[in-house]
Length: 249
Ligand code: SF4
Ligand code: F3S
Ligand code: FES
Image (cartoon, rainbow, N blue to C red; front, side, top):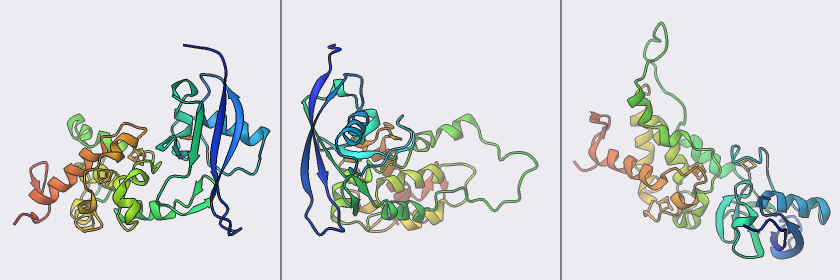
């Protein structure tokens, strides 16, 4: 692997809705080392050349989920993509699709979080509290481990063609977070969440495109998660326990 720095052309889609001017690409030249991340490149351009470029970031380590971008046409976290893995010396950076642009690479995440909140992503259990913890076996905990890894970056939902065409679709991220609780043995809210998702704008809007799975920086099997929720609606059972009337009846 070459350790030499590269000269990159960074093309950023600029937009400020307050000006009334249409979005337009702007190009910058900068140098980057192989182990720099796309986020480092973007920051360097901002610090050295144009401090008005708008983008979000926080942790810079793939944990907070705030720097999801469309990078060379594919959704990803800018802090997770190394310069050495870029095939071209041109990087295009656009805001993720399907959410209103506030400025440049910053989108309004409210519609995304509204969908997330709509599936009640919290433990529901009105049983009398036990004297110690609500116990759970390792197998029961493993049942929903996949969906606990979500960092709410929106890479999946904004890579989904049905969501691009219909922002009322609850989207894959919300379904992953519903799955997180539907399959939790301590939770009692599965029927309510399944009722919400049993809708044309719920899981049935998913056309099994798989873009969400490819886009997920946490390697969550998003499409499989959605399929498990669909199957639960069809059978009416969560892990052999009846929770809702089967949609097949
Ligand atoms: Fe991001 Fe993956 Fe969660 Fe979707 S499922 S919001 S891509 S971490
Ligand atoms: Fe969209 Fe993923 Fe389904 S990309 S159509 S939510 S499999
Ligand atoms: Fe936090 Fe990239 S800045 S995930």
